Image (cartoon, rainbow, N blue to C red; front, top):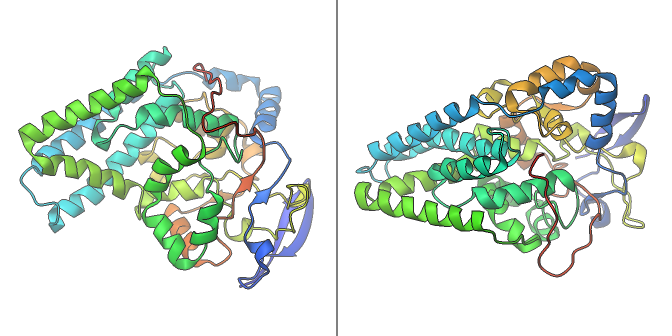
Length: 372
């Protein structure tokens, strides 16, 4: 499939065609390699220069913790209710999909807020509360998420440090309809397992506390409620990152999809896209599912100002509409999953990559700013 589209950059419009499904392999099977810096730092500086009042939006949100406690309590209640229900029953599956997956997606994204220290003033309090918030996920997750996610912000698109990016092997084997459907169904496993194969982080006492607390809680729960309650947590976590409406944000945030896709040139000097054709690499969604996901759909706004809490991101957009309204956006997370799987111009290659930091051995020790 090949279609003519237009791309607007620097007040000029360029016309070109998206690559056809039978295009040469060196055009289809390659990321958008670029030497250009990621766009968020420059836009942040421009916004602050024009709207210095944006600084008043920064800081933690005190009421978030109460919402999180409510979601954790809800998940514990359903886990207790299903303690004698078979995981293979429709009742178990439907509750795990409708309540469990939606709640655990909120849990994942609450840990995302905590990774930016946006629930409490002191970083250690955010880390410890993240370990508690981790309970309904069923496996230790929160301690590893924070350093990897900060690397994603600080080195966005970096081939070695941004583990949100698909690997070369994923692009080769999964950029077909069956592969993309497999990826969409099991994407939570890719996000959980990919980092350890790309960049290993140092194991700290926070990781140890996360493991000890989660394992101890799981053991106590299984002994008192039975194994079905733990299976409810695990199934909820899996479905939260599978074919679930809220899971659309994983793909929507940074994949270059549909009309935003541009023709790739043959790579030269590690660059296969010229500056004027470089597509946007972050996309916002302003639909109703933001109410269930701490406004994670405001993703350009979040990357521009990662130290603004979820409650203030709509205000940021209201203050600086001239910076955000012209940007391409996503209208439907459900639609994103469908378009990603069945539109042949959408593949796992559709991500912007840059060489950035070189890999040294199997482990990196990049200083992370706890105050960000």
